[in-house]
Amino acid sequence: MDKVLSSSNVTDELQNRGTVERLMFSFLTTVPCCIFFYINAIMLFTLRSKTVFCETSRYVLLFNLLLADTIQMVTSQLLYILAACLIRLTYPVCGFLNVIGVLTSDISPLTLVVMSLERYVAVCFPLRHAAVITTRNTGLAIFAIWAFSFFSSLIRVSLVDFSELENLQMKEFCSSLTVFVGPLSDTYDRASTCLLFVSAGATILFSYIGVTVAAKSASTNKTTSQKARHTLLLHLVQLGLSLSSTMYTPILTALSRTVIRIVLVRVQIVLYVWFFILPRCLSALIYGIRDRTIRPVFFYCLCCQLTISVFPAKGYK
Image 1 (tube, helix red, strand yellow):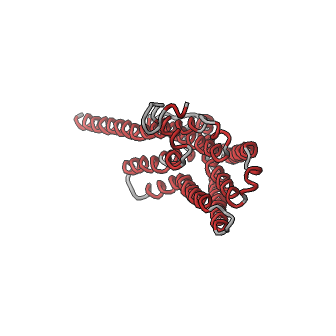
Image 2 (cartoon, rainbow, N blue to C red; image 1 turned 180 degrees about the vertical axis):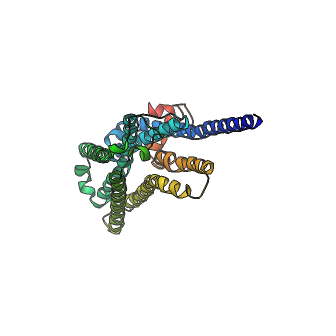
Image 3 (spheres, rainbow, N blue to C red; image 1 turned 45 degrees about the vertical axis):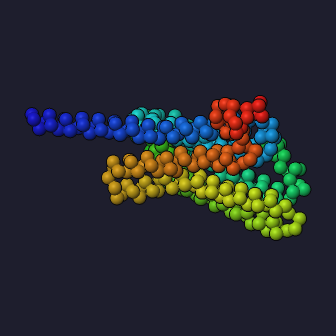
């Protein structure tokens, strides 16, 4: 009897410890996510607060990039909280949430491609820039980006092996690994991700080389070309940050073979914040600090429109 009670006490202690750890980890991920969501929301508001932002192509594209990153960040955090609370969803609900995540993850690199081409045209073909890069053409490009990403998501869903799903209620926690099952879906996921990021990286590098070559021309504005090169390097870094999320699953799979479960869970939290949460906020911070047109309005809105000496309120009414 004493052995049974002792075993029961140990089990209860382990369960309580697991609950405390889940609550602690949920808090440690939710707090930075809320902070980053606030920063992104302020940047999105900033990009809709002035006419110049709504009518300039690169700012419209930046808005689209930040919107996709913010949606993906919120979706990822929602799935994490549901798993931490031991809530199991149905396959349709889980599939819908994961399709949103896949959709927005494809939008980010495609938007970076269009932003890079916009800078390339601005430096290499300055006389044609105003005619080619118009608000209407930018809107069409954004529509094409969303349409392509949505179509790719539908293909991924159509390749799911539904015969492996016994019923609508999930037995495991919701994630892309548990909903997009089947060898065809996995193969398509790897092939499409590889093709997307290789194409995006090649386009950005091509734009950078083109701008660098154009900078040697006597007719090219040196200041404009230098800024364009810095912007393209920034796009390359952003692409790398977007690509980092694809390393999440392979790293966890490799670690699962060498470390115990509790260590794996703790490492998973760190990787989740590093690969999913942090990259979704860096674009807003970088542009908010780097861009001279955005910076004063961004900091003014970030400070809840308080009248401060550095950014006087009367200038932004």
